[in-house]
Image 1 (cartoon, rainbow, N blue to C red):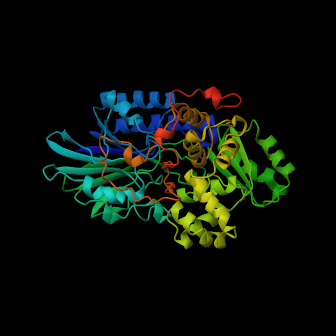
Image 2: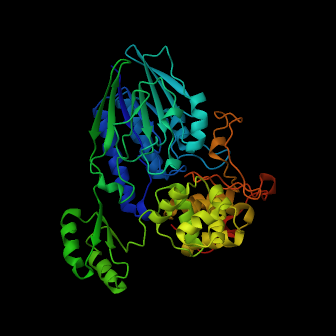
Image 3: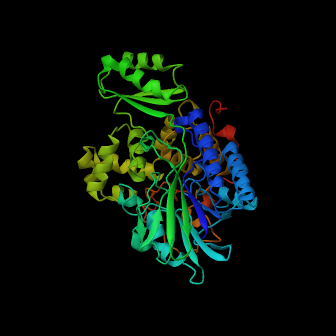
Length: 505
């Protein structure tokens, strides 16, 4: 019976809030993951998206993946098959997914747009079909025509990076089960970071292994992480969750009584250790700033990094992508809205896209107690269709001392959207932004990125705002068409023309 190891969402290169210790924790956990996979001697290893944190991985992230996966194929003789997740979807025409590099190196098979590969395991044929991440509304349109099992194969497996309806709070972020084709013995899923072995699609198991290392403080509440070991022969499917030790270096301390902060911290620090990244939240938003300074001084040297906040300071921003884009845009316009309140308002208003927000701002404005004109302006800003002056100020604010100046509006939209979508600005993101600026990238729609795999006839269903295409609320940006390719500056663009101050080292 073929043995399949199913992993997903390793996010190599991720550094929570730019903290290097968190990036190192991701690498160490990945090493333990691959070591444990190898010891289980799988015939096939499936990577269901987001192997990397960025579509242009940091050199160490690429080297780590290349070395460890190459060892896995040589020592365990495993066939590795992977699809691209939303973090690996390239942003511009002509760019390639980092998984293509690994495929060119002979490390894995990269499946795009319904590609398939058949693997013979001791006389049992395993047919693997995969599709890269797209916005949920796009996937619901294209999957029925692209994902097909092989009736001649003994075992059919689908590898997908998506959230099945019910696995995330917002319906906008999920795909309906009826839009995912039947006929597969196992659905290897990625994108949801919590392990889930209870789902079924058309009577077959559909599972998420979860992320081996949590990306946020919130995810750290899930104590058991790892991967799935699947045995299938076409008649029976057995699934086992294999735990892998993760760093356990994330800790949240909620301080209810500011006068007793030392006692509450000491309890947590006994277990956390010096490598811990600790987030301290004072329940009272009016806590005296001097107390917060005392806590920061106390934690210095006792833990690797400390973040001290009040409840009004969100950890990662809204979880729903549309809410996150709007939250960032509203903040840039000087309107501060509680993230949960914004998500609830979007849900109650039945808003599904930035187009909806722009067309009917009064509905959301009334719920939030915000001026409708401001909501409409936020929708334009989030879509990259705003007044360049507003976008420039937003960009400069988000990159702080690394502010951008003299940005040509023909190139600015790409940069601004990347800034607005980011929860933190680290060196890799700055590098990526500068690459976009220097190349004059077009930021094509994700649906058009894999041209050789994706038919041009696929409709995206996008509408326009005053002739401009707003974003959809998808995590990978759909860049505004304000400036067509023929309008963009020709020839190379030097970074000195765009950057004020020094880039981070």
